[in-house]
Image (cartoon, rainbow, N blue to C red; front, top):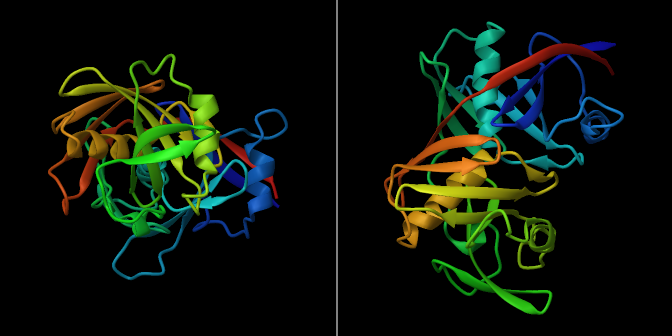
Length: 276
């Protein structure tokens, strides 16, 4: 059978989006791996599936697969593309959309200018909620990696994140430390790794090594995690702006117990069909 799909991106973090409400198919991890290959497939960081909700209090269910076939809990840039997609496809007329994900319920708000505000919910700061192996909750943790000790923040935005402060993101060891920390035994479900360069109280630069995808042009949950880590440790103030390789995201967070609000673009690239 032929499946319709849309290629989209949020700041260069790119997605294949499939509507499984108006068309029916059983998508498996092997399909994500096959289609995600940039040489022999469509090529993307994540596959996004739009499904009918299982919870009557929400509008849609949203599933996410990395290009290596692994299913993940959350994707901030993907959430913005999800909102744009369901409006463009007339799957809803709402501008405020509640979505069920593996990492919890999120709320999406599409502004008149096309920017999408995502209520990512409160960050989870306790180590067992990340999950991360530690004796207790702290602002940062020393972690041994390949004979050296790095200091990092560990938290969850519905998916696990480690955030390291660096002097310069251009020279940061993203492709060395990123995979080493992703598979570190203290992160039993692996982890996304953010490298944060603070410019001033309201501006920073960020690169992210994503679990199951490698370095991406942007990572929405990674930007939220980096903002939370920077605000908690007194480096930055809310609201703030993060510059990623693919562009800029605005983040607001009022502190523990409050939701993280992320604002950024969502772009449709092309429509296509793939044989299942």
